[in-house]
Length: 98
Image 1 (cartoon, one colour):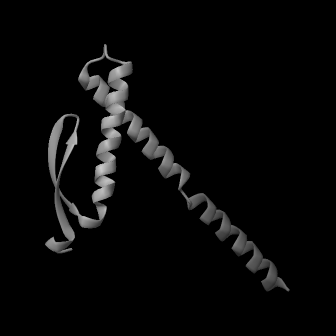
Image 2: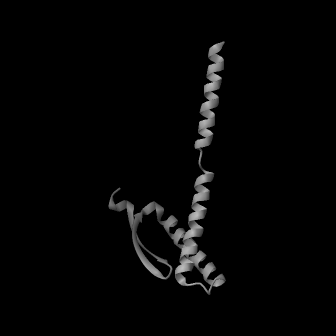
Image 3: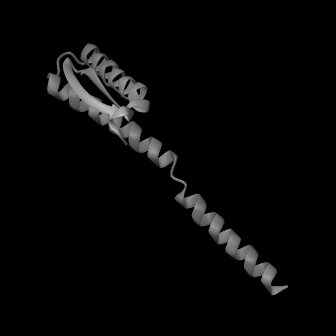
């Protein structure tokens, strides 16, 4: 990937400006991710104002990580592939016997 395919952007996350060089076609993803983090932070800050900012950030990290793991598990096709391979093998064995 050459530099023409890269884009320099600045994102504001948790009141910190983060300069990044990203693939040009992923700009919207990065901006949406930063927005998601900031929205979750604002939610936790309004609901759990008594907690330290560090704990609020840790809760946001945990929330996002849990959602990531759930999504990854939901999209795990390995058990289905194994079942299809087993069924395919059974079918091939059955038809090869005839």
